[in-house]
Amino acid sequence: MTSHPTTSELAVEVVDSMEQVSGTYPGYRRAHARGACFDATFTPSGDAAALTTAAHLQRTPVPATVRFSNSNGSPHTLDGARAGRGIAVKFRLPDGSATDLVAVNLPVFLASTPENFLNLLGALKKDPVTGVTDPARVGAYIQNNPEAAAGFQAAATMPIPVSYGTARYWAIHAFEWTDAEGRSRFVRYRWEPDLGLHELSEEDGAVLPEEYLTEELVRRLENGPVGFTLHVQLAEPGDPTNDATKAWPADREEIVAGRLEITAPVADQAHWAAEIFDPTRVTKGIALSDDPILAFRNQAYAVSYSRRTHNA
Ligand code: HEM
Image 1: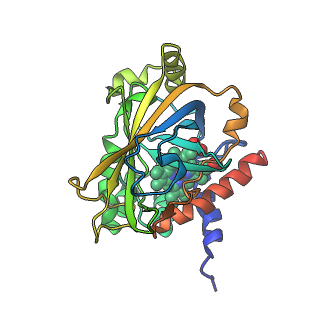
Image 2: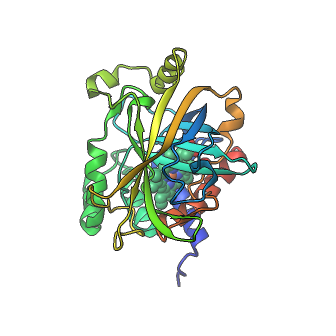
């Protein structure tokens, strides 16, 4: 008799499957393995202060640490290929605590539940005979989970950015903001690059050095900071808060909550590489939505963190 796994057993199973898809690289994150960290400052616009009591969204700038990454679980994939890119931001708050915002260059996710994500990983595993993923199995996953189609469509056309600073990034999940009077509103976050959106063709991307994105950003920062504005979409009643595969209507009200200015690579890359950026690390004035993927990420990231910090 097989018993249904508890959620943490599911997290172990998911991370095991991620390793089967991408390989195991001791000491590295099981997703977004290659990345680099940068010093930054986040300056709130003040426009979010009426909607949330979160300390970094009032009026005073806070220091932040930013990790840009290539989404692959292997640290040796080409930056020039069409693939996910991440921006993880740790805002350091005046009381000594921190809150994280983790985003990718994809507006919606490829699964609505952790169980479906496990099924997707099963479909992505390389065929032992051919050594490559069987597109028919991925097609069958989308057919069985039609809500995932929008995410796959976005992934197929995601840009190969000229720079980490020329891509748009979404945090995907809904979060709940609460104001000083206790009134709540659901929101979704998006980073818009000051530099605008600039992408490469597949041919141009293929001939760039493996790690060109980090090298490019380090060089670019020698000539001045690179910025992003934090756009926040406000939900209307009835907008789904528990499904990362579903976007909200494009005409929902938005505010600009602030601007992130990235200034230089951190002095101690090894220290920051070993840190964890966890989308469930929220702060007073921000709560998690009921999205099951969001809550699950905390457990999957903990499994990956535990393995990589034990050099597994
Ligand atoms: C079931 C869904 C997901 C699973 C199982 C998963 C799993 C993971 C794991 C294991 C890591 C490495 C964690 C570490 O060792 O610190 C990671 C990193 C990351 N994930 Fe996810 N993830 C999921 C969904 C998402 C979504 C929806 C987003 C985008 C909003 C996302 C963006 C990222 C980013 C940007 C990183 C790198 C964070 C850093 O730089 O430290 N992931 N993910």
